Amino acid sequence: MTAFIRLVTALSRLCGVLAALMVLTSVLVVCQMVVTRYGLRASTTWQTEFVTYLLIAATLIGSPYVLLTRGHVNIDLIPLYLGHRGRLVVAVVSALIAFAFCLLLSWLGVAFWYEAWHEGWHSDTIWSVPLWIPYLALPVGFSVLSLQYLADLLSLLAGHDMPFGIAPEKTL
Image (cartoon, rainbow, N blue to C red):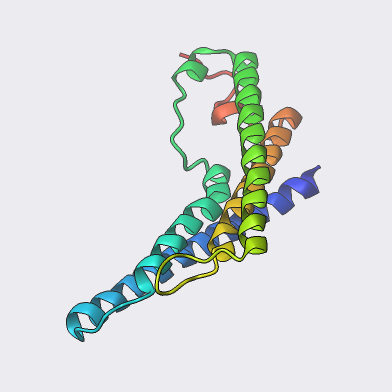
């Protein structure tokens, strides 16, 4: 089990690095677009669409890293008033619900991606990018996020992680 958790942790960190590189690439492309449009007075064709797809992909693919590092918004008022057992129940139930939701989005994302690939969908812009490329971020991001939720759940149940990161003796 710890090997699985380590593997998922490494995969989530890789997703975080990829997401950061996507954001950096988006920034560089926007700078290039500004220079091209306003400095050189030339038209741009692909930059806006590229940056839009890349930032969406960065959000989806970076989400497992955000969960790994607990970088998301966490409202812990109720868990602070609960004892350790109550916190554990709330954490496990919420992780199970989130895991099921992410699994569903992974499944639907694969179906959506496959349809775009199989039907040869392209964007309706002058760039006409094959849509299976940007749509791939949906099943990849949610699949790794599902794995991260599963790893978190296993870590909670094994006692390797404290629910909500709160030590058992800390209550309000």
